[in-house]
Image (tube, helix red, strand yellow):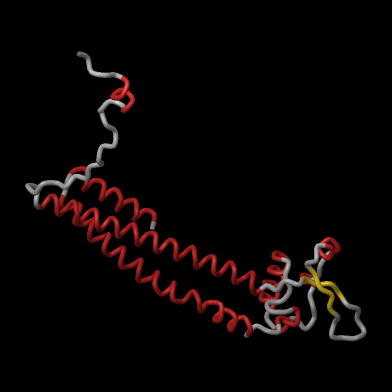
Length: 206
């Protein structure tokens, strides 16, 4: 992707500097195609973004209870819980047997990040686990990834649109070289007339 963008930028710069109509036309076609492709992928992603949380929730609920999944899935859940200090996808009840990765240390208990729950077996004592569940944290990073992708797509689409407009204007100017070029001028604010105090206190000589 980076190499393609660099080649197109060099092509556009060459066409503008050398006033090469062929290079500018090729650049224009590439910009139009690039703009259409970017919008083709960006619009579905933008439409899908509000629905992604519900889709992910339905997918993750298929893995419950977590104890009954494959060893790789349980290891992944343990690693997520250790990294983000959370317990379960939606609740600690996602585990039949609460793993060690859910348990808090004394410092985290003092910070108020934990809750005390009892095991399902009455013979076992209660334990302190993380209050935060893992699904909101996972969704935060998933939506962040969606936002980054959307930002990249729309930024490239806008740049391609600007390239289309500029190259079209240059091609039009080269096609009709005798037409006067419209120049935008800034009105002059400064005046060369003498200050008002000179007009008042410096009378004209007799």
